[in-house]
Length: 256
Image (cartoon, rainbow, N blue to C red):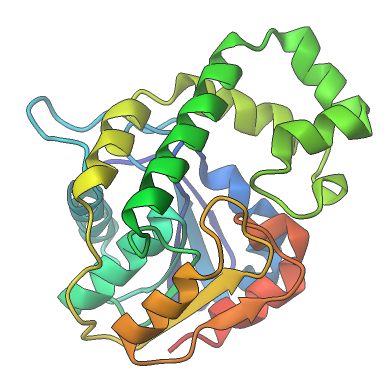
């Protein structure tokens, strides 16, 4: 399947996978650091960013999105890449590791390690963000960028340090969330999402210490599932790439 993507750098291939409602540009704060030693390919999942929707009749689930990533890699001739993902993308990275089709996988605050109440909270918060993004006029988006209080209100659920966001990052992310055609069905599919099968490839799981969407207590369950200690990303939120790009790059490059 053809997907929109950005490629940078040279070296072993590394696929970067965003979370629900996001786009490949969410990885911009860490891309050049990663590209110093990897061929970095940041993708838009089907129905998100600039990628086309899934084929008619294909449901939006984490597994079908993982299928799309796997077929995209085959289309590019990329075999057994390293892979890193955030949130939904983190789950997809672990799913690909469970299939044994990646060299290593790094998952940043992956979904599916929630309790029932935590799942419902996550879904309700994401629905509210989506509704706000679709209703927000462009002039309000510009105000959110320029006003520190509005920026914190707009981004505070997902990042620990809104002031570190690039000026263009927040309006672009709001626009991507508002127009993501795959969002609603993917979010509904979370209700039946369980952790993937045990991984066949080496994995690393890291969690934002200040994650307000998927609280860090979920990292304890992820550690039990993986049999490995989960790294805590100090001072980082759910989307840690802008909170501490250097730390996130180190975790990804040291995955496995």
